[in-house]
Image (cartoon, rainbow, N blue to C red):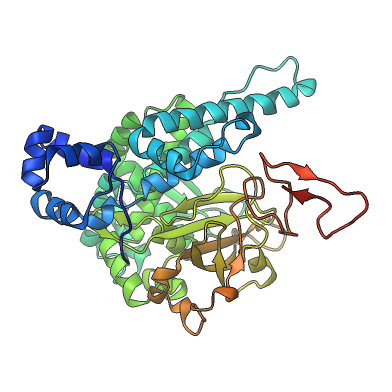
Amino acid sequence: MAIGKLFIGRKVRDIRQANGATQAQFADMVGISTSYLNQIENNQRPVSASVLLSLAEKFGIDITELSSGQNDRLLSALTEALSDPLFETYSPSLQELKLVTQNAPGFAHALIAAHQAYRRGNEQLASLDDRLGAAPSQEVTPYDEVRDFFHFVDNYIHDLDLAAEQLADDLTLGEGENYAALSGHLEAKHGVRVVRGEAGDEAIRRFDPVGRILTVSRYASAPTRDFQIAIQIAQLAAATKIDQVLKQANFRSEEAVEICRMGLYNYFAGALILPYRSFLTAARDLRHDIELLAARFEASLEQVCHRLSTLQRPGLKGVPIFFARIDRAGNITKRHSAARLQFARFGAACPLWNAHQAFETPGRIIRQTAETPDGVRYLCIATQVSKGSAGFRAANPRYALALGCEISYAGAFVYADDLDLSNRGAFDPIGISCRICERVKCTSRAVPPLKRKLVVDHRVRNPMPYEIE
């Protein structure tokens, strides 16, 4: 895919400073004038193809990694924050916002955090009539803080991923039955024996550090059972690396630290069962057929979809994919995007997205070609999954798994076969969230857009009860 104009001044400046060079010295190494380098670093001029090639040749930079990625996520979050009526007197252009995220990402993060605090403060005030004597809540919940941590590190933790992949190679995971390899390693290396839980035990996993016994629910599916064993291995084998990641994250509370620790255990487990290189190769060979990948690695569909969205290793990236898990109310309970499509931080998912239709067709994978208001087109797939298998009377939550990529990568997916990708009229118009969607004629809109005036004509009743200026 061709790379458009790149304004990557901060990245170029970081490369220069990492090599301890002045602007004059670095310009000489790259083969450009000092004034041109100064303009590049201040995002006054884009980087030319010849400069990109020079950076790749002289400094071992992967050109594909100099494109948006992190900036897209930050730009989306900043745009959503500034759509709040709080900023009704300020409507920055897209170019202004890009300059902020490229030149001052720390400031952008600070503004987003301040907006989160403002929003939660308003929510708290709205409910004070029920909680006048209660202690005030935190400005940013630990859960949201952890979710943002994974979001802005591209949902990829390099050191953990490498360690998990090395262990997977040692255990030859994916080449035989995972359970035998994982449980055998846990007992041989850590002296922990795996047993099945009692019939009435509701715990999915329970570890006895004194007796060195790991109990796994007898009703857990094979992928869930293996994943829980892999989590136990993470707790025993990757604790030091995880502590280092947590220390660098600088969370505000111990609660956030522990929530993130749980997420990092899960990350290691996923990287262990679905080791990076072999999984990436299989994904390419099988053209991202999630059912075949699940069978190939003895994993669940959710584990496969989540892992596909984490293939962001420098120099060895997979297709930029977005992934979300959505409940029946439309709430996004898991989200990550390596594509330009960025999920809203507040509100439910767009009702026109095919993820909602997955609940109507359980057991099937449904496809959709869609276009967002910015004109970017996507291939979207969705399917329903159920969590839990403890019998007729047990709760079995259902979720829709949504996965997709920009249409330029659709050829790498088996799901694009026989679809007409050249007919722009065949793409469904979808948005990110009703509160920030720019489409003015959408009859599926749940709430009016923020920062847009409404016009109500009592003489006429159109499909929408108001007009949006």
